[in-house]
Image 1: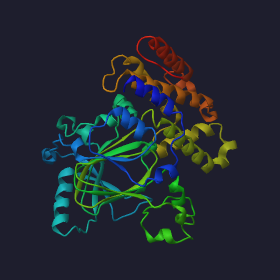
Image 2: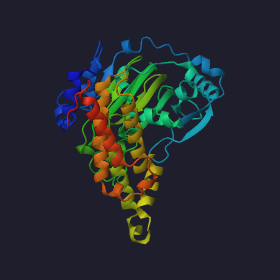
Image 3: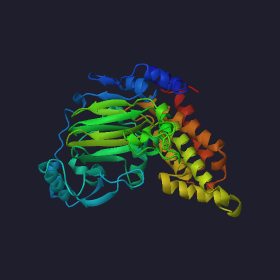
Image 4: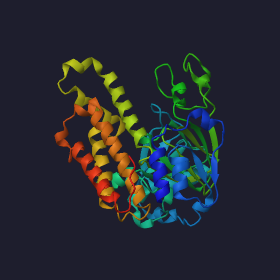
Length: 402
């Protein structure tokens, strides 16, 4: 990111994101088939939270060889697309070799099997087999706080391989923490149905549960889904082999494999959508608090119990969110002058966004109630360190804008 782009981004992030009506007036997704600078992608898609598709030219140097993995006895997570468990498909674990054997038989039997339609999903292949190095993350998606944090902990990541036969699919959902996602088809074709943020509220049943399948005839039943007719038509995108789709933060979607398909999927977030993640966490906590409100006056540690339940449901609580921000801030402060992939201006932008989010945390009543002694660094101290770092580098080569 260059100096001018940095200045623009610092200003643009303060502007309310383009409204749903403004975006939908165009009613198409941009198809990128030529060189695009990171700064333009940042300004045109990340900040306004707009979807786009990259042509196969951006994956033409990938040379994946999944055949090598057939000799491995690694277990993989597999979902049954013909069964429903709550609002998802039930999963099992089987050896990778066994899934490939199933897949071959499924194709030979006319894409049918008594075992159902099985879909290998959320396989951490890059983490399990880093030596295979089957792909490289495009530069547009490398500002990835989510995986940066979990890589530091060395316990998890949000990089996945999906493998599924024709007819396999993923029910209606939004991605973890309302993160961005990018998905590249190694082979095969997918159909995506995407809804802008807010439209999912029209697709809830009378109990407040999201629709499992937005194409189901059940949604026409006003007794079950009283507001479904108010929802817009989804943005329908056909993704061909080699293409990469960018799914913006908080866009609910449903995905079908139109052919036997293998894809690489990453969930990721950064300074552009950290505010959406923070709002998601507040909403999650509010939902938990409503669920157990009747015990509020009978438990001394009611607020802490809400945090425990929230983490069990969503994967993170306020304390870990503060730790997450600390890791990102530490990395940016340490490498401010040497962060070569995206440049020092991007590091300054990241620090600005972390500082803003910490300020929001410190003003949040639920965060104030938590035991801060368990945090590795007090948020006030962290915030001051960020400010001092930005101030000390301002005169060198960074132009920081409040």
